[in-house]
Every structure is written in C-alpha cells, then in structure tokens.
Length: 165
Image 1: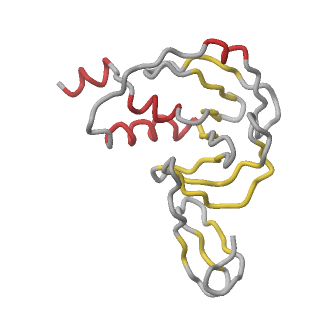
Image 2: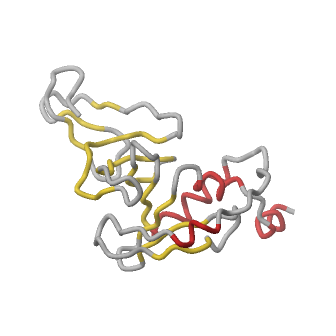
C-alpha cells in the first residue's frame, strides 16, 4: 500500500494494526471490512489453500492473521487462536447462536498448508460450534473458512455457561 499523503511505500510494523509511511511518517489504520478484518498488506507468498490467491497480512480483533480477500478464509497461528476466540466471546453479550450441523463432506477435503506446502489435517474443532477446520501441526497454523471463527466464538458452550453461573 502507498501512503495517501505522499505516495511513498507504507510499512507494516510487527504487532501493529496500522501501516507507517517510510517517507513522511504518516500512520494509516485501514478500515475494517464487512467481516471485521483490517487488511494490512499486499499478497504474500502464501497461497490460500481454498482458492489459490495470495494471502494478505490482516488483523482481526487485534490478532494478526493471514486473510484471503476472495474466499474470506483465515490462516491463524495456533498460539493466538484460543486467545482470539476468548476475546471474541467476551465481546459477545447477546449469547450464542443456534448451532448448525456441520457439513461432513468437508472432512474429505484435502488442503495444502500455505506455509510448508504439505497436507493439512481436516477434523472437527474440539470446542463448540459444530465446525470442521484444517490445521498444520508442523507450522502451528489453523485454516478457517469464512464465518467459522464467528460460529465458534458465538456458539453455546456448556463449560462457558457453567463458569458464568
């Protein structure tokens, strides 16, 4: 992305939700899209395992991830995944959503890890939400198709409800 003030290249600092102009020092916070994602960078050398276009650096609820601007899938580091879900759950004052049955045909899907290019494992998510996701243990990455992160975060969870009582 180029600076809207001077046209120079902008830099994404590690851990930031903004871009900084290398020439004039201007700081830009990209607007959130309809999914609540801030797209922060140009396509990377990591390709979307679903549609094959370059993933981009992005942030969602202050967590850094890689995002596909076509299919809107998310590549999330396992180290931050649980914290991101908890952050989203804390912001969910209205309670859960009605659970949807998973599409079991997704278990047959074979995705390639965008980082190491090896096969990802596709399985049921161990928590609430009736979600099937893919992960790469070697690279510590989770792939979630569009909408699945929010299904997990907003799903009723017996353990969560017991803790709130």
